[in-house]
Image (tube, rainbow, N blue to C red):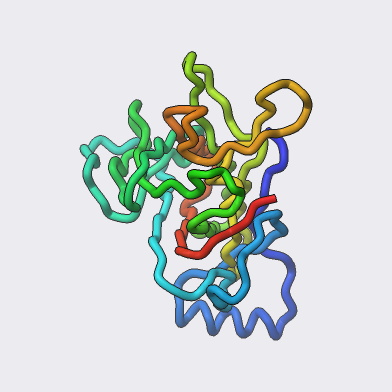
Length: 230
């Protein structure tokens, strides 16, 4: 897959590190920054010191575990989903209010998460935005694609993706709306990637394909502010 969006942390000065340590003591989470072609709309929400907007949001933690879970976690809306610490997990996406439908992604059925339709008109501007940061033990990473099936059951995965990397130190949020809510795929073979929003009727059975390489926690936040993708 092309165009991975990397989530990580650059080198900071000693003074910035001191402030980051103080901030971590106040809040046990922080942002992940990198460049993105998703554009936040200014003046709607002010950004916090951790890279995420201010305001109400829905939290979802995707937790990597070394061994599969055996408990039935369907209908278990605990704001977390368990995935394989190593290998691929499918998180199936259903339309509706934010809710975890099946928290166990380590079994054969995968996990299931419910979220609203972000762009029903395919205008390129969403009704809500997704922010992410990598947490847990430094060193792990994961690649996440939005995928779906066509009418014949053939899978299509976006040519754009999220690369979440847990670096050392203070972690900041990054806007990953474009990567997690749209599929970019060449539909007619002309060499140009077409934009297909999540839950567009062109495809069916949408899911996040989560390829994990030791990432313990990916924290997602969903804010009711728009993002325009380019």
